[in-house]
Image (tube, rainbow, N blue to C red; front, side, top):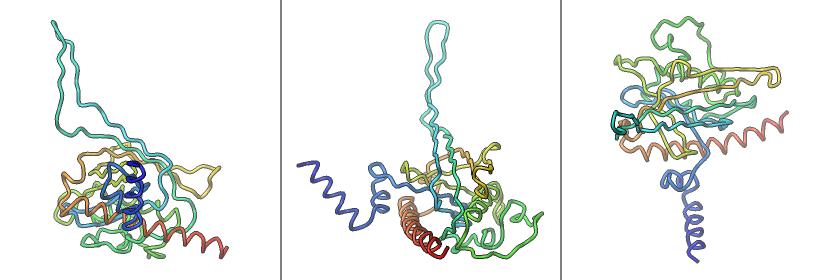
Length: 253
């Protein structure tokens, strides 16, 4: 009876507010298979946002221990640290070939000058020293798998840049599949892009990030939970739109 009551409660909440909101409200009880990258300035004004239209093939997270054991002359010394220990996150996958509809990419806020919507696709372009030619956008909200990869590549490149105020930009990773969001950096060996003959015209990414702190500990936003909820709602809408776009594309072809 108790289990049936809990199931009915969960189904009632899910029916009322949706799976995405359920995951945002109870991240330790309900997962949602969604992840996103968000590039902001030091004041948390959004520059670029990418909710992955296709989930990575694999997500690996390494949580090192905070304990250091040393053998002394007459005993054993154990040292522990109560502070946050950097964690490694690795994601691998591809975005396929079909068109993807990216809802939030066409709606940057106060960081628009550094956004991909303004043609800023690499670190040099935001410093005024771009070595690439400037091209117009086919459509900022509709991308092929290759176009989505270019946004991912742009976010990774610009994540080590400086904002207009001379302060470092911030990169956030939303891993709703595990109910966590972190401020992250990309290490020197952090990202690789590969393509092979077996999957021609599909670029694979292999992105490694180091989690520096939980999002709620460093974000200037009013509520990290509210931010996560907005992210989940946007992801839900985008997932539905992409499913429809894929069906329409297939019917046309």
